[in-house]
Image (tube, rainbow, N blue to C red; front, side, top):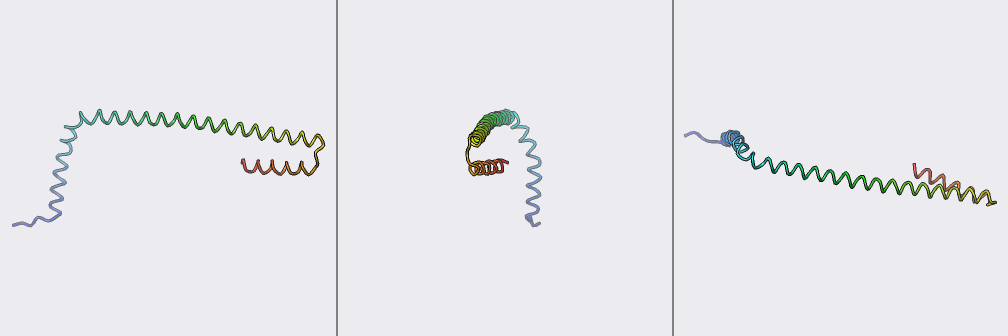
Length: 107
């Protein structure tokens, strides 16, 4: 009596699966195709919503950056006006140091 080892069992199982898979796919295709189509639609909608959310977030960040730049310009103009009105040289040097730090941080 021949001995059936694990290789022979694996080979038989592999051949059986290779024969049955096309049959199963052909049988289930009418059911799986609409489900796959629905999954793709859901994924596309999720990507669309994600893009919209990202665009809104980017717009808000750009607005904040623009506001911050405007505030920094206004602060620089105030410092320049104070210096022209007779502020001390030390105060001007201190504000210049602060603006240099800001420009380094913003880069």
